[in-house]
Amino acid sequence: MTNMEFIIGKYNYWIYIVLMMIGFYAMIAKRNLVKKIVGMNIFQTAIILFFVSIGSKKGGATIPIIRAGDEAVNAAQYINPLPHVLMLTAIVVMVSTFGVAMALILMIYRKYRTLEEDEILKPGAET
Image (cartoon, rainbow, N blue to C red):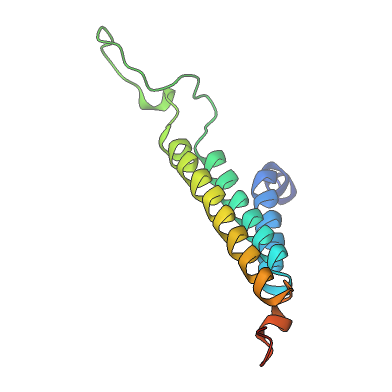
């Protein structure tokens, strides 16, 4: 396997890296608060996609339900459900964080009449 085949074979990791960098750029470089929150949401989504993808495996064809009559258990046959369950919790936290952040942004807008970080941080910007 050549280096190029290896890099192309791991395309899902490249997608996560690109999404994470887009979200990170939006959080750091943008001055609009809504754009910062959307960037944070993109960053969190990339992390969730990463963990869901590493929770699957080739050849894992069944879920880990073991019946009473089964004698030998081969762990290689089963898919680990833990990363997927944890990411369901992370999705709930992500949506909750987004909702609270948007409510805070609404309060900031009502007070300052702008969502631009530079204008809010100016001395004497409070109305």
